Each structure stands twice: as structure tokens, then as C-alpha cells.
Image (cartoon, rainbow, N blue to C red; front, side, top):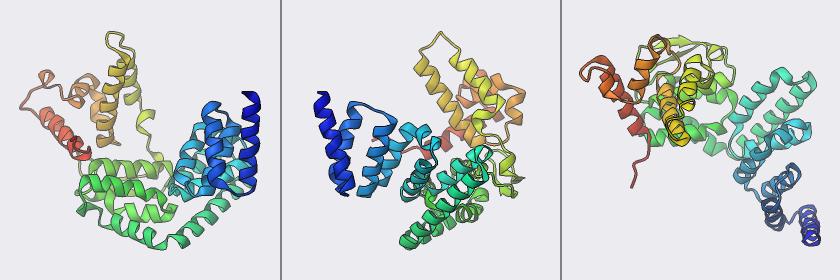
Length: 304
């Protein structure tokens, strides 16, 4: 068995050297499924990238993300894969999160590589990039499910193109609240210090600095709910996870101001879960609970 594996490894590496990427991807995929490791992961990712299947290459690479973060040249390669997998924005966010740990030399290396890859990608995909920016410009005219798709595709944009393109959507009442909240969170992850106008789910337009915001899972409110739910041993853990997932989605709708919820977290848990027996069915909390349910229903694909 070990001899067969060594033979397969030899053939796979030879195929990679010979730029026979389809064969290399097939062989390394087999090797990786038999025995996963950071080394086998890297070779498989390299082969998949060679075939042009950058989406699969990126997905596989993320299984051993720490190995790409540990070596400069592997991270450079990861940047190449991610940009070509139409995830440039996620690379900007990744590098922003790594900034405190990078030397000046590393920072220059990674950002220069990112700029180069993005420039090349935009030159090769100019028409689709222009289309994406136009779709974002008229995002409010699309259905919620189409907005969801367009928002996902916006990950291919550059740092500045993304910021410029999503600003109008942040205050457009015809853009689904989850899309608005997702864009705001993306700006937070990009460490955008410029103030932006934002239309929350429950209140009037406000002016925010994305960089100063907390992510939902970083908030004390979320941690309290997570502790309360996941610490409950009277129900199966998967049910508790489902309930927490529903609460998280609705907190995303209400992002980023949780001041009112923090005043009465127990009551608001019932509101978030639409448990009408715990509040006046004709009162303001019932309306909020219904509005949250309706908004989520518009966001989710209809089951066949």
C-alpha cells in the first residue's frame, strides 16, 4: 500500500512539473482524500489552480489556512488563488486582520502582490467588473434573492471600488436589510475609517464609522445569548445551535445598534424567536417580531 502511494506521489509531482494539471489534480485529489496534510493540500491546490479551477483551489486551501499564513510565499500564492476565485475583497480583509502581525517588508510584499493580481484580473475581466459595479448601483431594483447573489459577487471588486459601489446601498430602503448589514460588516472588516451613512432596520438614517464597530459575535449581547443557549443541557445541542443561528440572523438585521435589546435581553430573546406568548400580541414588540420574520422570509429561497 505504501509503495503504491509513493508511486502515485511520484506520478503526481511529475505531472505537476510537466504542467499536466488535470492529471496532477486527479492524482493529488486521490492522495489528499487518503491522507490529509498541509503538504498534500498545497500540491492539490497548486494543481487545481493550474487547471483554472480557482474556486475549488481556494476552498481546499482554506482547510489548511494556517499553513498559508505561516509562510510568506504560500500566502503570496494564496492571494493569487483568491483573487482569481473572485474573492479579492476577502483578501483585503484578511490582510487588514494580519496587519498588526506583519513586518513592513511583509506588508509591502503582500499588498503589492494583491494590487498586481487585482490589476491583472480587472484587465482580463473588465466587462464583468463593470457589470458588477452597475448592478450594485441599481441594487434596490433587484429582488432580495438577486440582491443576495449580486452582493456575493461583489467580493471580486477592489477595495475602493467596493466602498464606492456599496455606499448608496447602505441607505437604500429597497435594498434588503441583511444586504445593507452585510455591506456594513464588510466595511468594518476592511477597517474603513471614513464615516458612512447607514439605514438601520428599526431607526432612521445614522452616520457611522465602520472601523469602530464590533462584529456581532464580538458583542457582549451575542456572547450572553450564546452562553445562555449553548449552556442549556435540557435540549439537544444541535437544537440550541439552530436557535442561536436564528437569533444571529435577526441580530444581523438589527445591526449595529443593540442598545434597546441590551436593556431587556430576556424579553428580546422572545421577540427574536417570535414567541408571542411572552409579549402583547397587539403591541410594538409583536410588530417588530413580525417584521423580522417577514424580512427573513424574503431573504431565504422558497422551498420547493
